[in-house]
Length: 254
Image (cartoon, rainbow, N blue to C red):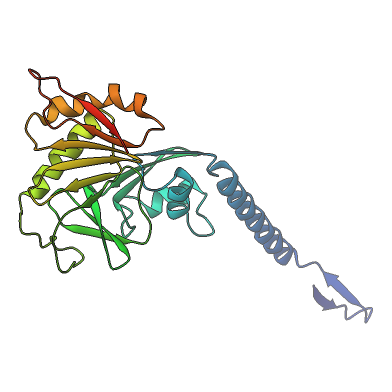
């Protein structure tokens, strides 16, 4: 308030400071507008639906926890800015992850996992390698859907380098085997090579003796029909001599 002294009466007249009141009202309106805006952004863009595709090694919940990090990790507007033209990297077994905001409350996470052909056990670790034999990950846990490969001779393993095996073409053989196993949906637990590079596949307590890689497609093609009938059994299914002309199979129980 401004005060003006009345000379005639000797009294003091108070003059209202309307400008100050207006400024206070304006500031309060701005604060209220900001609070309403923040409330709107937090509620309207709150993520309620998450679509995860391409994940095998990690569950959808694990993928969400990797992507939706921080105090605003569940806000689609924040995520759209955070991952705009940027991929999620640095996660074991994952090449990249794309995050796309589909709507105000829905995001889609597409996972591109590293191409794992198999793993070998070395010094208490599981060393995962790709289709070229490059060791891409070292882990203390196994991954479902990726077979253990045994029978390879090597004296050391270096991450991000090729497994130092004598027969470099073995990785192409592993790739051929895993492609056919995926084709017929009969992924095994173990791929075993002997000294002559004959192959035995492991399915729990059942072994499948493939032998040489000749007629490999015809041999693996039989597994979807045969394996269900061997559930609960323990022994070896012999497909060494199987071909389209000679359909010879046998099962020897242990």
